Length: 123
Image (tube, rainbow, N blue to C red; front, side):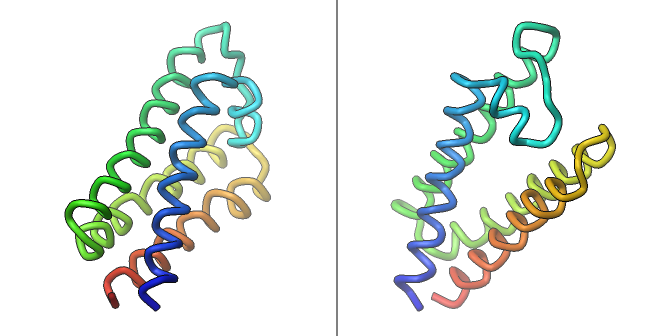
């Protein structure tokens, strides 16, 4: 179970880094994949950059916690971070995005993050 817990946590942290990179360097496609398309050259550009920085930072903090503070610190972090995809789900739904994206991507991500937290608590 330890290998599974660490592997899932590392994959989720790396996924956050990937999302951060994508929102910083490919904001248009990233926003479309998020579920609420935005024009990165318009007013939304700053917000897409903020999202990229936020997601990338979560990935870095998660990896640092896992490496230097251990599984339980990472578990608490994952538990708290699960609020982000839940908030993203609400954001997509409030802004006319597809329910399939809101639930299939964001809600599902929150569940996977909570599973990761549970596994890390058991280590």
